[in-house]
Image 1: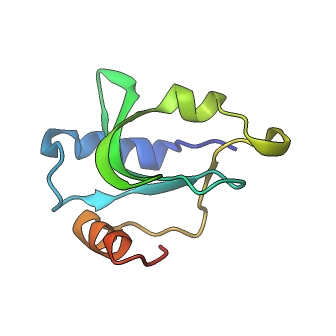
Image 2: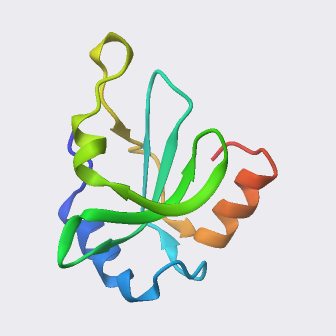
Length: 106
């Protein structure tokens, strides 16, 4: 599965100057189909397409950077790779953050 489409890339790069500002949108959701980790993409460095920034729900809920190449290379249980949630629609980062901290599934 292609994680980054042209539309997602365009939106993520447009938001890069906002850094970790929670007033931006989450433009994509990636997940491990056999695990509990989920990555919510806020922005991407236009100069380094491997550098992504967003909310990560793993052992904890955190805001930080993650690597596109690592997401693309990962093979988990049964050899399954990270997937993009095709039904996810962009939503405000602050809302995602608050819902994850409240233990809700997005």
